[in-house]
Image 1 (tube, rainbow, N blue to C red):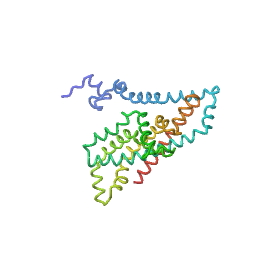
Image 2: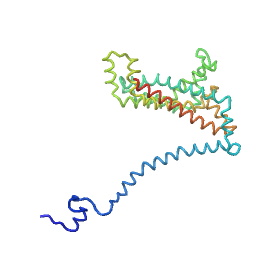
Image 3: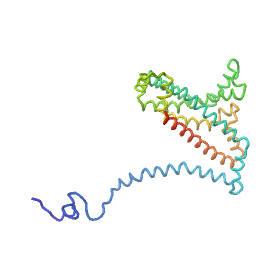
Image 4: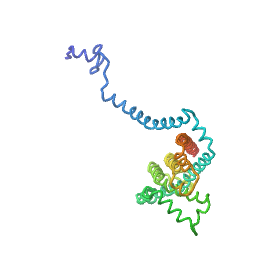
Length: 289
């Protein structure tokens, strides 16, 4: 026998047809915990935006303080004859460093993952050495080693530049190796290799047409970090007397703070533009593969 008392009516709303257990009357009030869970991600996003945008707004404001709020600092720095050659050299150095680093790191990480996984901790330790060795020590050692026969490579500006790019590639190893290694851990390297070998592919084809496309996002992450490091590196470029962006920017910061603020924003924009181009080229190459 079913007993329909006043308490059962308050639960079923418009009658028993509403089913048992459904609240009726006023709209249900969401639990306070669910509201906090919905707002928490937005709070993190807002804090992140404030953290990253506030320095940019301060830099923009400083660049506009020259001549009482005019664009004079921007006009002066854009008209500087030394800026664009320095920019160009830094961009070329960054792209060359990415190529050198990829040619060394990708085959090494791939071979370790495929044939010698026990050596992975040792390789990781080797790639961390740039964190241990200070930049001043590294550049002085390079100058001492390559400034006398039979390894005389610092006699001209361009040959010194090659030594510097190799040093930059060594500095990028911690970031590039971990990005590539994480990409290799996310795929079945052995199965892909055996499948490619069963179709008659050689090692260069496997690396360039099988491994590279499958870890292109990991490669892109390492390339972005490498490019940012090269564009802002000062110590090695300064000791090797290279006319790149970082020494030029250091000279501007010492003497012209308003123009330095404008130059910082230009460098920031060019960096993100270059990174976007690298991302576009990498994704396009991945779709073709």
